[in-house]
Amino acid sequence: MAREGSVYRCQECGFAATKPGTCPDCARQEHYVQLVEERTAPAKGRRAPAAPVASVPVRLTDVRIEAGERTPTGVGELDRVLGGGVVRGSLVLIGGDPGIGKSTLLFQTSRALADLGAPVLYVSGEESAAQVKLRADRLGISPQGLYFLAETNLEAIEAHATSLRPRVLVVDSIQTVYLPDLESAPGSVSQVRECGGRLMLLAKRTGMATFLVGHVTKEGALAGPRVLEHLVDTVLYFEGEHHHSYRVLRAVKNRFGSTNEIGVFEMTERGLAEVKNPSGFFLSERPKGAPGSVVVSSLEGSRPLLLELQVLVSPASFGTPRRTVLGMDYNRVCLLLAVLEKRLGFPFQTQDVFVNVAGGARVVEPAADLGLIVAAASSYTDRPVKEDLVVFGEVGLAGEVRAVTGLDVRLREAAALGFAGAVVPRNNLSADTPLPLDARGVASIDEAIQTLLGFSNPS
Image (cartoon, rainbow, N blue to C red; front, side, top):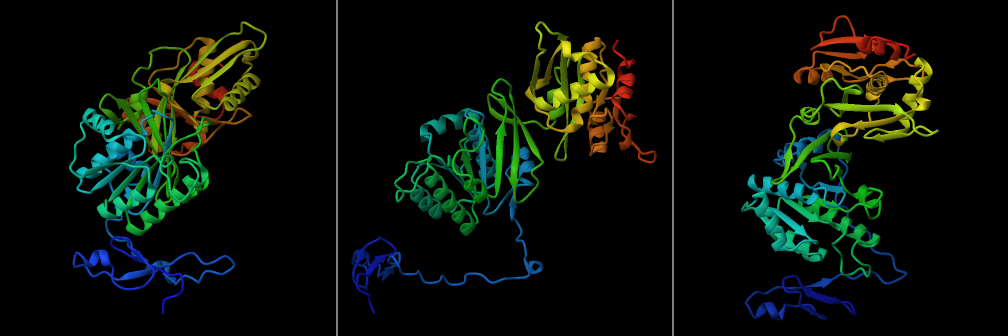
């Protein structure tokens, strides 16, 4: 029995009526579609009826993973960060500074996925179709399976995605889409939260992998509510300096893989190019026989990176010595200089110290401690370190050199690039373990400087 005030709507054309029956508009085209009662929100003070149970508990051992659950994107460095490919129904959020290459990365990824036969829908709320076409022509992208939509209304985006049923959906960016039912402007907290939630439900319901581009604030954090990062399955940051050609893709959250992996790209005229050998890329312009230059090994996830660490020590012109650091943690650099001054007597209280990781790279691992100590001593004494040596190890406040993880992969990477030897923590070495190159173990910074520079006391 029809209730008073009920509304009946046609599911095909949207025709609304107050009585049940057949849609008159569809009947004119000989389509006899029944009007379905439209459920409205319960009146204030009434409790909504309980939703039907849609799932039942199952044993975890009985869960079966379908074949093809993870799809390679065709971009090897992105696959490495994602854990082997994009998972069906996953929601991936990519953030980064303006102009760093987020849209270029996703455009090239869309091209690669479309070339594999999977239809891809690229939705842009910031660029027109003509602008995107110009970029596609510049990058040489013209796959048949790549569809473009310039739209900011999320309801329209959902309708097109449901109709096209793409394997992958890209929304560039989440801060530009909006829901008409909300009165706030696009990019506001409520709009970003609700639009992110709707896209998450769409991805899980249809099994459509979804990439979201996110703006960042001037502090570098993703703009919008923090709940957006909780909603998505993966959060990636695209980093790099505008004055350098390299870009690094990092995962800070990944429900389907490790957060320790990084992907390295180089920005070229033809778009982003994958850097298969980032160590060789960062060491390509290393000077020969320069004091204060040391090669260190930094482990990013399972990938070892060889980086050139440069330190310049010069007499201070003013009463307070300067400390300028690029690519390393400033406080840790000051701590290591204090250890070198206290334990070995280097008079850094009268010296300016400038530290730089060449190529615009960044080192956050403690394994670079010993390299900084050696580079500072090398610059102060004007004695260069041998060019075919790599140095790594963590340094404690007592001047001891502590063991680090991943000794074998670090040394194999150094051997592959032509390095002949390494200075490593003594506790990392064992007599029964073969090594790919000659490694000298040291237990203190005094022993390391004696080994590399041939002296211990600067005075």
